Length: 463
Image (cartoon, rainbow, N blue to C red; front, top):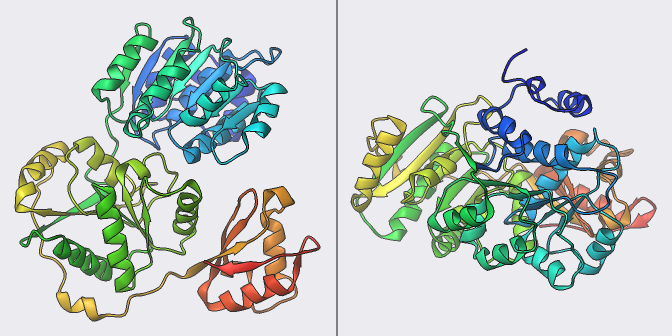
């Protein structure tokens, strides 16, 4: 029995069997180091990035401590964003299949407070939520945290970045002093130390060195002579033309730069989307749906907006500027080169930023040399469009719509659209989004608008 296999842990047979069924075999570094301490009941600080396997660490910890015969909320997981909270709740539900009658509830904005309050009233064991919505429920006395055994702060540094410190103080003040606290964070700013000191008792700190290595990712550096932002945008256009990535994330240091660059790229003809903190939740959801389903190939994002996103490996990462924080640079480039494939990360810099390069060279043990930019005549080449276009349908989960219903409506008795022309399907509460091959988009939209899904008329449009 390998000491890195889950079977070496003091977990119930039901949980171990479910882990095997879900494809969990060997533990990741953070799991191997943190789980023994977590399962023994210790407070743990884990410094690890998204994608390291940390969600399974706290999920297995809190599930092992729950008594399903009690109807009170016994575990609370606080996450910075709705997307992350919903991903975490989904993963806990999968792991909890082994424990009959475990109820996991997510409490986030975007869903009616009253509906959530009703669900809480009928009993939940695990609550996963965002600080704002958890505070709302505490204010209305619809959430009782007096029986919490396990408190988890996930992506804690990001919650501070987003201004949630007062909300965190208010929520954690309602939790019993005697409990297990698990804090996970990619970086460890000073404000986190004071929160950890107040909430935790002799925590075990586990720092997993970043798994991004020189061999996983090819890093390329391009030096700009002119310091104008215009020049930076032109350089990025050239790089996109030269590499023609199917999916690319461009990181900017500020919201302003993110908006400006995305607009410039759109004007040039690229299918670029911006992701930053000024977006409403529904706009943010739409950006992610279109990027993940490959109907937009470029996502221009700030670090805060992109943290905790479940984006599969991308072909290319471009740094519009170098981040002052080396940990942040590591996170950025870690979006590419996953699952054994070699990724590529390109960083643009000016003379003023040269000092940061020296630090990067030491961090990655690489020689940082600036390479010439691609030839400027590329800028006149036609820009390829993404293969897919997203179609929005005005029906969703509330209308009991399922992906199979949409697939059937598009492909039944028709030779013009095959299942290979249909990409990812995302069902939201009141609408659905489907990626459709550009070649058959008109046929598909007409078919949806003229036919019926589950016996009812729907409206569809490409977005």
